[in-house]
Image: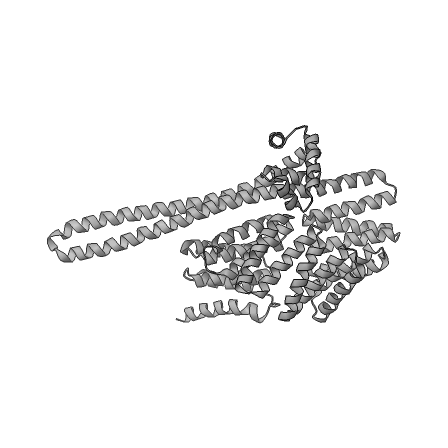
Amino acid sequence: MIEQKKYLYILIFLIIAPITSHSQKFSNNQIDSLFNEIKVKPNTTTKVDGLISLYKKANRSKIKNEAIIDEAIAISEKIFYLKGLGESYDRRGLAARYANDYEQAVNDHKRALSYFVKTTDTLLKIKCLNNLGVSFRKLNLEKEAFDYYFQALALSEKINHDKSISIALNGIGNVFLDIKEYDKALYYFKKVYTLDVKSKNIEGQQYSLSNIGESYLYKKSYDTAYFYINKALESTKEFNNKESEAIRYNLLGLLFQKKEDYKQSTEYYKEAIPMFTQTNNIRYLSNTLINLGRNELHLGHFDIAKDNITNGLKNAKIIKSKENIALGYHALVDYYTITKDYKNALEAHQMAMVFKDSIVNEKIQKSIVSTQIAYETEKKDTEIQQLAIEKSEIQEDAKTNYNRLLISIIGGSSAMIAVLIMFYLYRKNSDLKIEFKNNQLQKFMNQIKELENKANSKDEINQENFIAHLNEFNLTKREIEVCSLIAEGLNNNEIAKAMFVSKNTIKTHIKNIYSKLDVNNRIQAIQKLNVA
């Protein structure tokens, strides 16, 4: 009885702790101790919920312990707890995203969604859809990001959940920002800001103001941009959110760099660097260092400029941020050109182009691979669910027939021996069937893991091959996008809508593609690309 109460207290603590103190940190020993306490308990849905909650606390404390979530997944599979499976994979996807492993994040979130659609929990499904939108946006797969964000928005509006509506609208706005549709981005960001003011969400207001300011920055409306970003900064400083404060400084640094006020820009970037270093935000730190180096070039501080650019480039390579790597090499081109080291300038330019083009290649390749993995994963999950149903039916049939046999035994003592023999044989056969289904379940689980490993290794090989083929045909980024949409069977009107350009522009791209591939029609173009 004492042990049961102790277990209950642990679970209550894990559920309430995130609500009472988001800033509370746990040590490795504390996490391990709680994990061992939960692990020895019976397999129930409550145990799975406790493991998921503990995994959240570990991640917030920057402790990597995948054994916790693996245990939650294993138990959920054994007891067929679909909600637990969905939450486990969704949390694992978030951890992958925070570690900048966006491909793994997409795979885990898609896996989570396949379970959430089989439950009645709409809010968890919405969160998962928004998480998929974020992960696809980080991979520069704007079309897929739009799809999931709009699905999340529709469901959020259906249940009138303002927080989820804001997240979806923000995501849609950020995708429009990525594809340089700044007026559309502003429309969605301003809708979010209205919701944030209505709900008195201070942190949300800061984020929305910053997004609105960034949109005006790229529209070159610098005074308006400064008003919104600075307003966000003042609010952020008031509530002492250092990482958000650093992001605002980074934006103001970019704003004054665009205005060619490099001295003022440098001051803002220098404010951001120690904050990004303290919070270990490598992505923003690398961007800030590279842009600081570009400022120093314009100010004539060449040695300092090179140090900042190379340090920023080094950090970008650590997290494999291709956008920042390309930015770093472009900055080195400027440095070597100014210092008249034209050989190194050419090499830096070539590297910048390689990373710029590889972003396009990855975009297409990752879309294909993620679709393949999603299809295979869904197929295997369906088979596992079917096996679980069959196992349950066999057990239920065995129980029903057992009761019937008992009644028959009471009805006639003369037939008792014969009935017992029949019952024994039937139960033995049922046990064999159950064992067979269990073996099949294990086999399919192993196949899923093998498939995931195979897809991950195949992605790297396919990417290298695709880069080689691209160099052979010398297609531009936009021409590659057109080719991929042609391969999907879209006509010119549909391609124009998908790429947000005119039909005449698409015709021009297609004409250039035919010329470079030395073909006369779409079928020949697709065949030649497939052969390549």
